[in-house]
Length: 255
Ligand SMILES: Cc1cc2nc3c(=O)[nH]c(=O)nc-3n(C[C@H](O)[C@H](O)[C@H](O)COP(=O)(O)OP(=O)(O)OC[C@H]3O[C@@H](n4cnc5c(N)ncnc54)[C@H](O)[C@@H]3O)c2cc1C
Ligand code: FES
Image 1 (cartoon, rainbow, N blue to C red):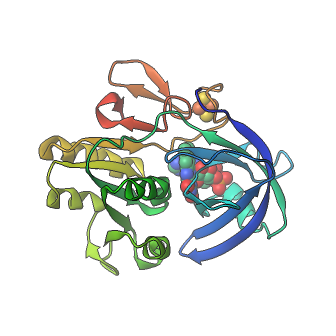
Image 2 (cartoon, rainbow, N blue to C red):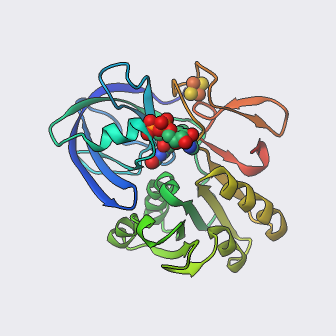
């Protein structure tokens, strides 16, 4: 892996419920480290014991001079334990993981996030903006209370379009629909549930958009050893999401 991986203790600076299932955790790494790149992720120790086993993977959603930010949904035992962590608590992170990252080439970028998948795109949006590129976020969720990352989009001053399944906020329907409103010169980067990514790729075959996918397979080790996260490439070879990914061009991977 080109980047140096970092395994370090980290102090919880903030752990705040936002809405729906969504929480924001800010972690101060207890060692010096280079700035993370958009698309990279970390593995967080959710418990100092073996219950539950293993660390959990989260996108580095943002960072500031003191801390790395992760937005997380409480979905199971590991993330539930995270929600009990308090400022001052010390945990461990294994970070700057992933070497397959987004493409910056296009002038215009549509960033499509399903639910907490938006956290896999936020840092990329910031980098694109700082390069003077056109950036529009499309953010979809089940209902209004599951759109908790709107506060981040507002704070950073991004243009965004909202979708909800039930129409309680923004447009009623699926985020994938949005791509029909943007010409094929817009490069699409997406992160979210696999069914969403599948239908986005299918639609892009009709609209002619170039698409990059940030995949969130279940992971055990996070650095290419256990083979627990593999996906099949269109060339028939298996690829590790944690190592060759987590971002892949849509025509290189079979979902
Ligand atoms: C590279 C990467 C980046 C990620 N970034 C984020 C993020 O920024 N924010 C966030 O909230 N989550 C993110 N995830 C998913 C996160 O790792 C899982 O939600 C978490 O591990 C669940 O742990 P748990 O112990 O609470 O749930 P478990 O008890 O392990 O599982 C609870 C439920 O969640 C499902 N689940 C667990 N892991 C995944 C997964 N990877 N994809 C889909 N369903 C899963 C299980 O099938 C089960 O239904 C990311 C995953 C990867 C691989
Ligand atoms: S999580 Fe172990 S190889 Fe990817």
